[in-house]
Image (tube, rainbow, N blue to C red; front, top):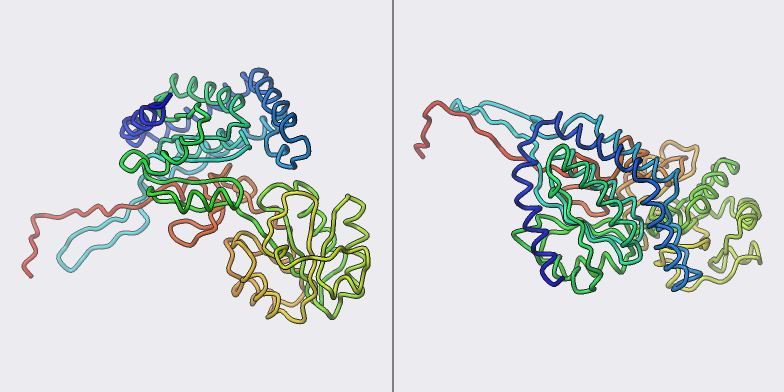
Length: 416
């Protein structure tokens, strides 16, 4: 299937001109129909997913990433509900962001328009196929999707349902799934300028780095989450432990889980043993710097590389710091600009932390697990952008648009 990528990208490009001129009502009905057919195809999708999960476990029986691969009735229903939420969102296409009249009498409008063909390369998580299909259609775009080989059966079943819905309502060619699992497909996709307008990678930090270094198509970086929670000297201990346990234990393999906890030295002797007690109940492996290990000998020694490691399992590293300044410096040095939190009662420190920490999402007294398009009210997300240009944080429908200027005149010509 050497030409599969080119042919499907070409079809997506051709479909874009039809989808971008469709009405908001047409796109809403198409997404609602996607949700209906996905629910009606649940048995087929879950059967395909069971085969993917079984094959993955045979190859990698202890890999924590299996959690990202698993679909069940609850998760599939959640994805379908997400589609309905996306369908109900205000339509971003054609929104006038601002407008003014120049001294020459020209009426200028800055208007939201679709980006074009969105290419998404991703590992595991077949629900991503559903989320992206809904978001690209809502925003008047089309998509070329290349999921990981570990989820190929699930993605094929999901794409079949999505394209069936689009065939009834808009255009089946608007969402293209690359079915070839040939490794070279991704590299070719990253260089398909003229057919794909932007690439969004989702996966491990090494995978995202590979995409960034090899793409000639513009890339929106997403995902890698070496995230921290800083427990300040005045923190409510019960609140802090509840937040840390939630952020570490609920789904440790996802990008918005916590990987590191920084504890202010003023409370370290009281707080760290309490935190360790709570985390060990859930089987968390805790590593730490020398100061934290002097306080609690159940903490294993951390190496320098640990501070840059995005643990995808029940591993957590702890470090004692002497000030807010030290915490912010550590986070800005080792973090991946995803999600960072402070637990404090001090509004001044809270404001400094949220302003000075370089991250897409900063939290005060709340779990970083909320960094999620659905939780933010977007219905779904294409990914969590950790870069600074165009989009940052959870990417919903507005982040899949760009702007153009529309200028109305009455015969004006420029004289200088």
